[in-house]
Length: 300
Image (cartoon, helix red, strand yellow):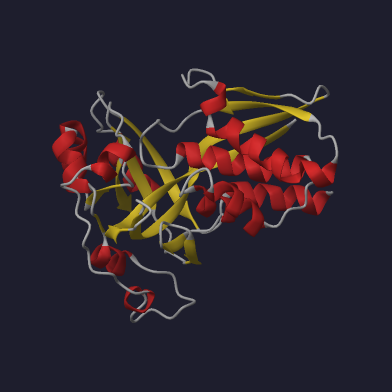
């Protein structure tokens, strides 16, 4: 059995620049990969069947991104690989559904990466990322596995280094619909684009971006709309604001605050009202799933 993590992400910056003719939105965002997330167990099956056990996640198997990613990978290589074995995938969820922290996308990415290793497909990362993009805009960043600046619909990725920070992520008891947010006429869609040069101004390329520059550009164009539709999100963010600047991540319900140390984050978490869930995670430059696969590859 192969067990791999599926890490969460935060959008430290999210700007919506406009709507494209195909209905997708042109955006700019800074993806921060975290060292906390779901996990997936992959067990080979001799009957050729792909099955997914998702616990309490109430989604039909054929709609589950894990199942769809596994089927997509197998279909993409079946013609050259002959008969592939089946697999049973057990998904252990920690990340809230609809939280804006990439749970489903990360699960799908880990499925592509894990089965590429288990089935010995030997597909390059770019090919896996392209397969993932057909399932969801956030999947490529998890497949590539680097904290990164993203443009386009999120597929144009430039790895960025960010100083070590710990985050307290709070999940109110609600699920935000991404489709509902992006289809709402009140969503801001005319933000001015920023450049990587502006983001890095005064910071050499090899030097990690610090909290000062990140807070200068931080913000989420979806935040005002989400908070107007889901007051619980506003309440959670305003509670976090007592510690440090707090923001919405993605188009989900989770909000976050950055702390310079794990101890400071734990101190804030200890005061979290019981009506909300929360977790502490460190920001990382390289995804935990990539680090684990690299160890497995080097030991083969």
